[in-house]
Length: 593
Image (cartoon, helix red, strand yellow):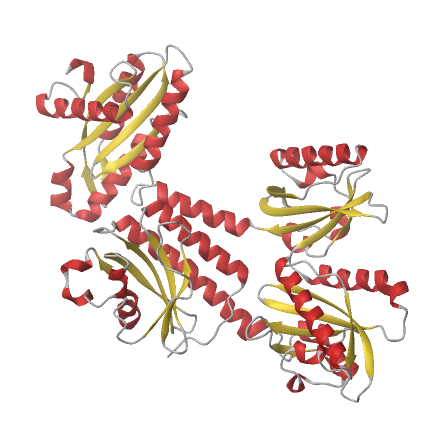
């Protein structure tokens, strides 16, 4: 069973692109790809990571079966494939990826909502790579995010979008404006026209495959050429300013009954769809009615799109209009939100940014200068007190004398994207077993602590290396499941001893590292070590088994023992092994070794 031709929205593709770029940044490989198996059995590069070292190009295709690609194997078997070094196996001798020097590979299958193969998400590198379990787990989570997107889009198309009984269909069919809805490929093919479209022109959907055919339907070859050129320019503008309606354009069109009508046309790109409205201005003076029609049409779009459109009076900094979509985003009705002062709409930090921008606007007005477009990600406050992230774009509205009279803004809810980015960052910087920071995060914390200490005289930083005593015996006696519980328990006991300036990390196995900053004397580290040892060595019960572990601690100090971050950690490690070897105490300073 193959995947049907599913239209994937532009915003979804942008999110997938961010996933690929993030995965390459974390794993440091040469390339990350999303491959798609199309209906013609071609396996093509659907998306590529944007790093310069990636040798692949979007749109490259290989015919399946027998392409020799790693990804064909993943799609065929529908399971993960890990190839540390393809040059060591005859299986990959005909693989086109080898020609690009991509000798190592990690790939997972992507399935559509109905279970059909969609393609793969994969990593490729030009050197041998075993791909750690953490990388595999990260790729699995990224694959799950992509498959969830496909499920959402499948539901959107199958259940909600312009079905014959849908509420949206009934609304559009009763709008006194002709509406045409087309998809980008092929050639902006029409998938829907409303009842008023048929009433206005006499055409039904099967009469016109693409809107361009309507604009070339005239009594004059000259008019047909002009119409087609103007229509193509209108579409080009709409694609350039996604989500923003084009300025109205006038066309002369021949109806099915031969009547010629003058039509005012506007179009807007919403997701991967082209929404076009056509207004009959034959019996009205275009010069007198243009502003009223444009305002009515724009308000119609503003009231029905998910983004929030608003206008603001620059004299009193108060909103004059807010679209109904504000209710879904914040819980406020439009009337309630219009009465809110700006400081109640945003968190203090975000309000400070808006306040600074409005001050710049007022300065531009005083100097009779145009304002710059403002774009930023700000945090707003909902009616229930919760917080959400929004992407805000602000421009100016000018009168005929080119004087700024109002600000117009578009607000897009990006809370889900921010939450996903936060989850991905946590996965990349924390140990999955204990949820402690990993080596990457604690070394970064140590580096920042060193920079801060260099600016303050008399303060010390302690690197404390911890190894659990007797852990191997516990693991061998009770099994790995109990062993993992012991590690989690030990991690919790260590965290209980730390202050706000300290950070603990699991280095690997039963070894932990603590960075304790802002110490005034070595005795501070000694007290912390004693506290950790007392906490760790206290017997505890796990699954009706009383367990006791010991701990050996080694401590080194910055800047006394070393000013080099890596040497400082090695010295703490050496001091810990000295404790294990001599059994002289539970902890020891490196300087005493």
